[in-house]
Length: 410
Image (cartoon, helix red, strand yellow):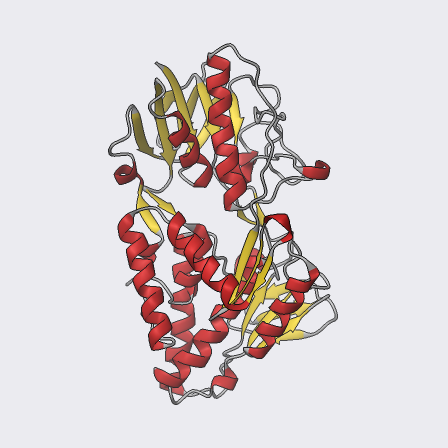
């Protein structure tokens, strides 16, 4: 059987695996973690809406009944294209006939001084847990010592879906947790400030939905700064482009994603953004049997612009890469990838969300919120996770704000 190695157990890697299994290929999935993370809900872990186990699913459990599919935990260090082997950080090398790179992306700090050192991201499960712990460590400190000179302001950088969802969840957490669990803390002291460099939030959505999101966030007490760039970040806060300094003990960076240095060091051609340069059929430029899919691939969409680094594009590129491998093996022509935009959604808070679907359909408020809930429950991996998340959300809705507000770790 032809050997296909897939590096990355995210949306792209797992969709490629699903498309290949049962078709006569020996598939090996490699990932640094032994679980797959449902990244769209990490912000809910960070704000104690969900438990970490609700958004993580063991890869080996997922592959248990898959034919000729194996899992190997490891970190990709090098690709030997001459011998067609991938070398992992622990020294193990694995041969391949076809290679699919679906390693995802990482946080992009856009060169802002101090951002990488002092900001918290929510791109991985560990990062989401760190943010969650920091939030409640701040609350516990003030509950024990009083406000005095301590600052409870949380700054969220980035007005895209991640930033809007995080700011909205923090605002609701502050309004509910401080009144129920921390009654000695004045909720007004826990400011949430959202900073966006563009002139509107949710730039990928229509202007009307951006305006709705702005109104809803403000009604929940979020201070929104538009047309505002971050000049630098320090241990004590954020310096804005206009010279203003906002003191903060927690700065959450949600301004964009980029490609890790590990990907850049693989020796493959990449675009200025760092994403791997691919041909229209998703083969890495200059290589006949290496594909790139998901966030790491510089896949072009309408108007010769890279497709967004979201779940749906990742799923579709993973499926397409698998189809092209099957086409090559069948001596058929490969086909260019065509992204089918199924719409985008973002939640702002309780019964407030925006959704932009096909055929010009736009939803706001409760209808968009329930649609968002249904979509995310259906796309979670594992029946247990779906039931757990559904139960958590139902309880959260009925009890209005109670959640797993614990500091995790040692």
